[in-house]
Image (cartoon, rainbow over all chains, first blue to last red; front, side, top):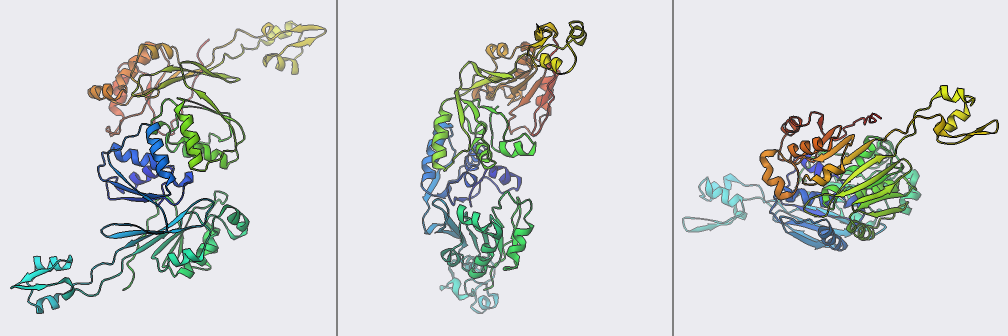
Length: 271
Length: 271
């Protein structure tokens, strides 16, 4: 989600792996959300990445990347799958999908929702035994969603697995004013990372520059019924995030303030 | 000299000041020498810089900056004085000048020399007393290169100052193969920062990618009679710089390996 200056360095520092399956979703074309993209792509090329990478972004990004790669003599070792950002489902991988919703910022901007696809239900070994399916490779196949044949009879995963379990959802607002549309979009997210540029006392600036206050982020998190809120994109005018965090926690207790390298374990939602 | 990714962060970290007189000289248009420029210019704007900034670079950089500033909606609070890189004198400030020389790299590339203008000679107080010039403001004026009048008689700085003293010279190679041309260009530099991408054992790669080895950097430093050599731009293939440094020091003892945040006091040359 976005790619600010220094992203490649953080990637390497935190061992995220430059050759993994990857989708980069850019919320909008302001420098602080884009400036790290070139370096990240080049470093991936230096390390001989061959896997295709997917980039979701407002379409001008692709014009800019093409021009820039020409001027700066950048040749990549892998293909880029460009997807033009718009509201709706934009990408579906094997295990997850990414949808976007229009955000309200000074320029065209999108919020993103990363959703794991539902996971298979829990395997019921007693049921498998009762059906006469022998333990071992056949159990494993059923657990991985494949059919098996035992003594001429076909068994489907549904015969031995419980109901599908919901996957996890992570929402990211990018830079935006809060809106009903976004509250609906982030409904029930396990983690919501939301614009929290200003304190309420600087509300005028939030309106003028089309950002959110910590309080507004908290209200939206509450309205959307998310599990956990992560504040981010703090104005450099505040020496510490203590007051921003306090403002949000008064409304929505399970709030943390993002910082470089913050790691958050995303728990699976209860079925 | 060049502006790689993260330059703005290093600027702030080391207290270099975003509102100072500044000339940014870009050696060539590869991403690792340019990727930090946008962020640096934007952060200067965020901090309301008003002073003009000078950028020396191959001319395509200016096409790229114009296009990029449009696409990424970047408006600056200050003017940019663009100077197209070519061999010769490119910029003369009040106290220094910058000259360029063609380097030998895969694409159009320049080495730069930053030269302080000669400083005034040393003030001779005994001479001033003998000439009847009263101590105080008049001495100060003479020391600052201005004439004074005492009892109807005009005195010039030359009457009380020793011979002008040479300023300091700092050379920067950018990415390049070594050359006689560069050895002449860097003649007598107080500090020379030179491409040292490879060890001699990887000479083939140095030739293919048009970089220098540590040994070649040291030979050039010796031939140019510089005072001190700083190796930089190390290939990521070497886990440490120990061998690169050893290779150079065998030829040119006063060599250091650059690292993030390295500070070097540049001594004035002896008159």
